[in-house]
Image 1 (spheres, rainbow, N blue to C red):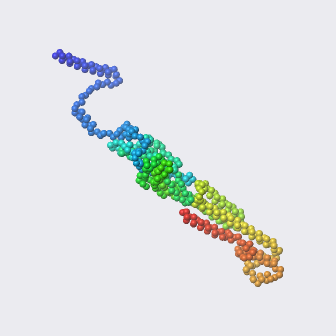
Image 2: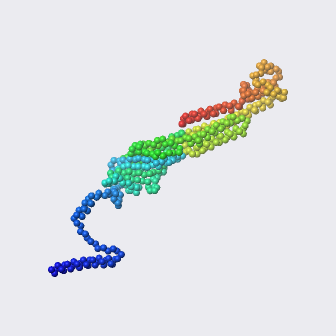
Image 3: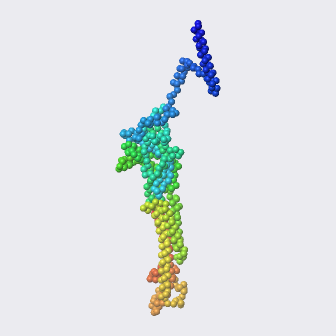
Length: 471
């Protein structure tokens, strides 16, 4: 009895002390909310409830778990990515497809072109395989590319190239659970294009962009177009100011280097046809107009030297300016271009029109000199009737009368007077008679008359042949 009372007193005293302790702690720290912990025993029913809720919850996907590093998930630290996939075995297959974004510039002077494209590579690397319950792939940016193996592609015959880096590096890496990899980057490249300008500006050019592995031969890496010709896609908005894009197509060849071996090489070929309308306005029409302008001198009097000479010189200088301007914008090639043929033939026509007037002027001067010499050898013709009152030509004079003149003694003066009259009539009527004096008195108007027909006819024939060959 006494023992039970003592145990009850001890329990009451312990509870009071603990309550007092909680109050003392609360009073000592008034700014903090003091609470006394209570341990609530867990019943058997509540334990089974918690256990059943944890069993119904789905296990989290490790690829979606916050804080899981991609290096740990892909086990990058466990492999040596300085070697290609399947090192020592068969060549790794790398499929390629290209999306051409723009064809920026084509230069005949530098013999190159500039192209912006999306270059995508497809291959399989089992070292990057990972487990995933519901995620098909993981996508990364360019920071992970530096830690794994990627194909070492480069552009053959390229002059300049760069990967876009605005706002960050335009590089994408996508890894699938089975180890398949998609590697895409946006590149602008300026590559060489060997152009044949023999038909310029009526030419059609074919250029190609060549892709190849720099280090791996065909024993280690096999490049191929993933979908054949369908691997090359172009933007519908691609257009050029001077060219019409006729065709894009792909090819695959092997390239051999004597020191390293055989390599797979992929070709992006495109065919361009030049727009000729610009050159018609800037080159062909002005040259044709200058040639036609030079023909105006054939209708100007041969005695109008101040009119015909400046006209010929002006057209010659203008043609020289056109030829110089065209050649200034073209590369210095060692062969003749189609535009050179047209311009130089036009220049020859203009130059011949100047030579034609020089011939006319020379023959006119020669004729006047011979007439003057003939008059000086004649005695005074004061009593001679005016030439207009005489007969029109020597053929109209009666043959008997002519014979009388020849039989009369001392009639040499009359015979010379008759020859002068014949020469003057021939000059007026344009009739060319036979004989020594009539051949010297050539009608120079006939040269201009022939030139009015021959020059335009020859130039029209040249244009017909030219455009038949080059168009």
